Length: 591
Image (cartoon, rainbow, N blue to C red; front, side):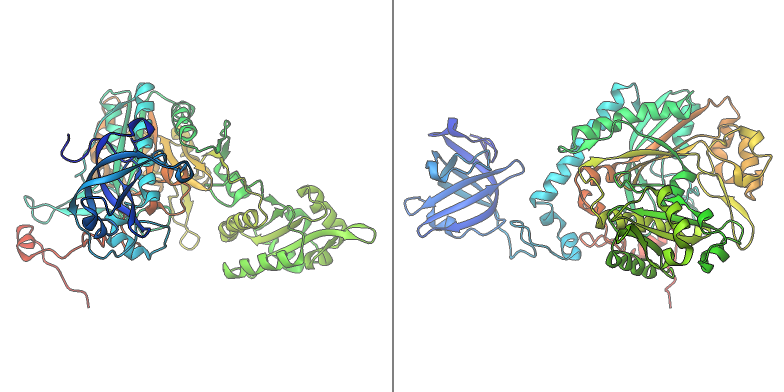
């Protein structure tokens, strides 16, 4: 017999009754029924109930067992009495009577329990992550992550992509976040960087004549943490294609992601149609470029109904160039209590409040209520109701000003309204491509033009587009949103040096600066670069959605905490003096 096990803790069933078996695992739970000990023995695969009574030759040793001791047992497989069968376990029809036992690893008093659903502070969970990972939910999350990655790899190979690895140590490159720098011992005073993404390398792979590349790539960014983002490193499905249009990229990646979500949806529906929504429309309708389309609310511009109206605040605002009034419909939200609650939400978000109108049953049929309705009169109120398609029991909320100042709050308000009114279909994955991103933005105070989005995107219209107003230049850039999260970001690349130099010149970077920052890629583009494009999909976020988790750390094996610290391994740590001397570095203490 094998030194540790003849079966795993999920293998045994009634066909094994009468056999002598060997199992190894962890003591999940101990129950003492007065002279009979019942132990749930757990390994990676499942749980088997083992028992010992006073007739067992090792009863005294079994009595000493505690939670999370790692043990090996030999015993006889018995059929459970019919009344004691546990249908929730694959092994629920049998139990193993212990004949021999060996403690493989005793456990000290536990800082957190593996059995049960107790909540523990994140600091405790991360400091003892190896215990946290033994818990059923995290075991399932990590298995799901592994299965998702395997599925993605197979699906990419099936559509003729090949996997190539790109460097982990490279040159620093500004790509929207801070680099992690690595000092060079052989070149004192110089630094490598961990790649924020394989962006430049994958483009160089296309220049090298390879047609379809992908990689499950680690990426490193020194970022502030969020619930849906790791503060140090993450993994993405990175892909690039040559001789393609934007639609070709969509057609390549959609079946892969759709297949993965259908495979691991757990009964939730996956939308068949993935609409393409312009960045401008997404901001207008949803207040964000990563909308949750499970929420049916779509915001609208209602400025004309307030021009010259009796509501002086809105009427005066509309005299300013670029100002708008937008409405957020709230089906079934037509109560003063709910409207006041949403007004308080807006005030917490830093706005003076949100105007509102709600429609209710009156003496003479439907009537509009709320301060706005009184100020603008029945005719304008009715026009708003008709535009928004509202009826009795519905409400609408209004925000005013220059869209940039309130769009984000409007988007969050839309989400809150959808949640509170139970408008969101939680058993659905809803996708949308966000397209036509503007390449440039203008600083409101200085008037300086800078890149708003990816500077390497090919402008729509090529060089001709760069001759006019830069704020109207759109890029062949796109994101894929799912349930309120950005899952994919990509672009058709700017592969022509002359267009790239012009694009950067508009943002204030001369050719010398571009060559200095991106010399490797610019040089390569001078030797017959093909048109190419691609995207990257966040593995962590995909698994987070599939696992129905709200925090990305629940699907990462060994995550950092909110302060970018590894409490388990003690990182970051202070270097020893010999290390600093080898690297010709000196640490300057902060006051």
